[in-house]
View 1: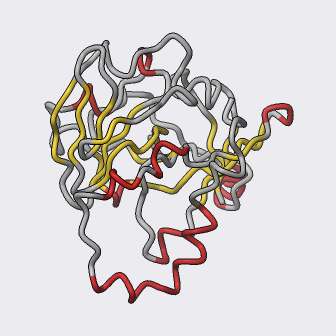
View 2: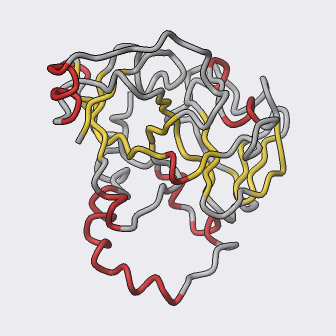
View 3: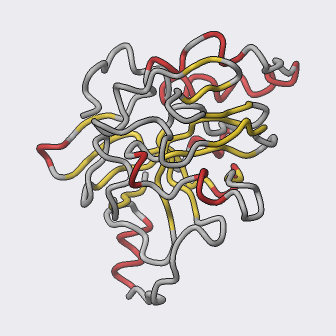
Length: 226
């Protein structure tokens, strides 16, 4: 685990500015890749963040960051929700819902109250390349996410290799403690209609128990995201 501090309002109301989240950095080592609906931390792919002064942490800060007791001071990281993964086609027209592989998402449980899914920046259809993800903030009208970086290499998508891990719990402040489950709308069977099951998937069976622990918690934690 590593702690990360939320620096902006782009993930409200799921995450508030100043929240401290714990990120699972271990599971990707077992072959798991980002899944739709997960909240992930990822390195700036290049050009997403404004230039900030370089920070030089002391030894104590480095040690605390390494063991997960304080956020990293060296990396330029962002946090967003995965909306589409490699092989998906995603789009959102003005006044419409976000649509993945022809299936509309019901995002009312997690996008900021009063926001529209994409009226500030309609997009698509976009085919997400294999090994990449399309990400959006829950506060749609206050999030510089994939929609706003389509002119950069990757066309707004983020490489799986840039993903640090999945945010699994809000750990601080104490009165905000909560898990971060995958919303039920991402469990719709239609989302996987365009995805083929690779025979080689059986070879990563050893990672399945960990992946299942990380995902599909919305049924147990319904209503707690706010």
